[in-house]
Amino acid sequence: MIAVALTVVLPAAASAQQASTAAPAAHPPGAAIASGHKLATEAGLQIIREGGNAFDAAVAVSSTLGVVEPISSGLGGGGFFLLHDAKTGKDVMLDAREYAPESASPDKYLDKDGKLDPAKSINGPWSAGIPGLPAALVELATKHGKLPLKQSLAPAIKIATEGFPVYDRMSKGYAQRASEMEKYPGTREVYLRNGKPIQTGDLFKQPELAHTLTLLAEKGRDGFYKGATAKKLLAGVKAAGGAWTAEELANYQVKERAPIEFDYKGWKITTVPPPSSGGIALAEMLQILEGYDLKNMDPVHRTHLVVEAMRRAYRDRTFFLGDPDFTTIPQKVLLSKDYALGLRSTINPEKATPSDLLSGNPTPLEDDETTHFSIIDAEGNRVGATQTVNLLYGSGLIPKGTGVLLNDEMDDFALKPGTPNSFGVMGYEANAPKPGKRPLSSMSPTFMDSADKAVVLGTPGGSRIITMVLLGILGYDDGLTAQQVAALPRYHHQWLPDLIEAESGTFDDATARGLAEMGHKLKLPGNTAEGGRGSSHVWGNLQTVEWDKKTNTLSGGSDPRNEVGAAEVLPSTP
Image 1 (cartoon, rainbow, N blue to C red):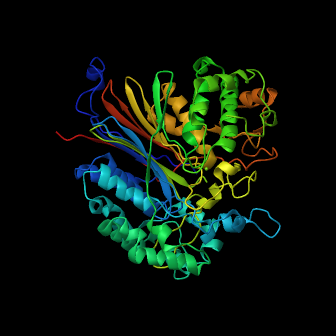
Image 2 (cartoon, rainbow, N blue to C red):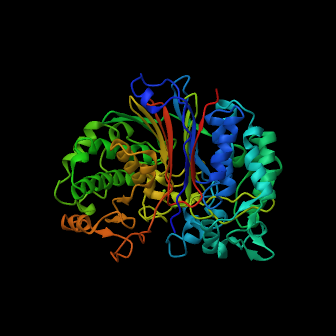
Image 3 (cartoon, one colour):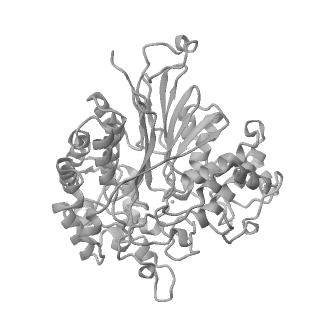
């Protein structure tokens, strides 16, 4: 069932008609937040009301999502935080991606026949990287926020203590993962009630997680990476058969990285660099597509060209991208308009390019259960953040006494070169695991700026994240509203397997037939095309906010596919 997410837009003092003839506004008329859960959106707005800025609100939204969306994110995971400081005009990305523990060598993930063993790569202690989200919350508060960390974490602590109603996606997700999660005493203590699993409508309290958040609030990063919480994390991982060390846990650091910037038809696009693959892939795709008049094309030819751009970008993702601290990435070449022109020249406007005709060797030169939120405040500060524990409920392991559900991000490494991971994407040496290395990600929080508008957008969706953000950017360029962008139908191509996947209703019969006649293979809901994942009826959970500087109005879009998401606008008080 698709539920319509709540979108509340409160009017600014001046009417749009009055503002339309004026110069673009210097500051937004309030704040706008869109997130995957209404309680997280409200937590961020509460912190804004208390005098915080977008970065303080991000702490509240992020930590609350970790409480109310444990299927998607939490203290045991990581993420990317794209920040815009209105006062300085500076953009920065906080890389809070998990990293590989020292024990995680590739051979640990193979079975006796040398094949990738998913029991280790996606379940239990060996699937978990060292978490980064707690360090990101501290960094946001201490370096960018106005309020104490303790104040910004208070909403999440309150909700973890008092509980919230379990929703369908949460209970159904648990049912899918119950056999793995119930192997671990710490997980059973959180998710079983009198020996029975959580059900929709239950009041879900997490007192141990509340205590862990309280220690983080009081002691900063040492409240998680050292001391009592760290000892419990290490003991829980060891009891489950894993091997983390106190030193690698204590040494985790958030890294500041320079965002990727490029232009697309009058928009300045600011997005994430490696270890996200999203920024480079978006730049490649959009710089290929800027050579076409997409707005005036029929649906078949427009989709064909977008798919061909996707195909080429994902091919480069496979061979060239990884953690830039460990891998030499030809970023300058991949971001070059000349390189995009060369790729564009290989596209036949009337016929699909079979993926096996694009070289499978390097040339010389991310589950759907992730979450995203977007924020703009009254000063013009912006945050786009995508965070995750990777697959549904991560590793399934909660170290006893912590309430912290650990990620299964090791599956995002190329654990066996040339072997697809859980999202069907492959990698080679550039994304092979090494101690302290961060796995390649598809998370792609993105800013869009034009003379009249400022936009924040992003979504979960595994390897489909990048293409959903691409379609969102094209939607804004077509003149759609924030809510229309959040609701756009979605399709995807990732080089291999050589298939267009799409949601239900994305293509009418004529468009699907036209694409097939061009040589494209389509995998649609109910379609039995070989290869690739079964195509879901709906994908992602896009959250976006927009400031129209010409009318000086704010708006938000929350994905209608999500039953509990919310986008809200809070006007400035006189």
